[in-house]
Image 1 (cartoon, rainbow, N blue to C red):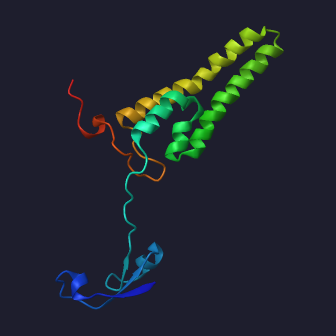
Image 2 (image 1 turned 30 degrees about the vertical axis):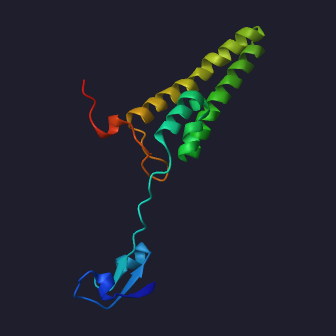
Image 3 (image 1 turned 45 degrees about the horizontal axis):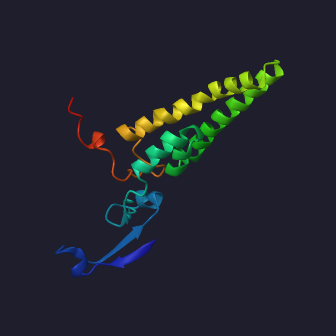
Length: 154
């Protein structure tokens, strides 16, 4: 808890000058009467991540979840990577254990791993069209595509 003294320059013509207590604790601000303490809100962060970088990562490396790592969604990125690599490894191992040739087992592994590829392509479209337009800290992406600002004139 801190105490500030408001001067006429700080108050912008406010006739009520004096000492005001501030806090950054929401619980402390809720318990205090309205006239005694005010909650200091942190400034809104500016966009840091680019939607173009995120969409290119999703198009090229979406199967590995790289766009999610870039946006700060580490758990979802790990899930995408685990889905792709795990399904490929599992299908390859099952194919080889069943006595299939190495090429057919590899083809089965690639076919099953396409789930991760489709997931990445779907999210690339979501980034480009606007539904996925914020990073993990809820900051908007830089230079969002026009589809999120104005309706598409069909």
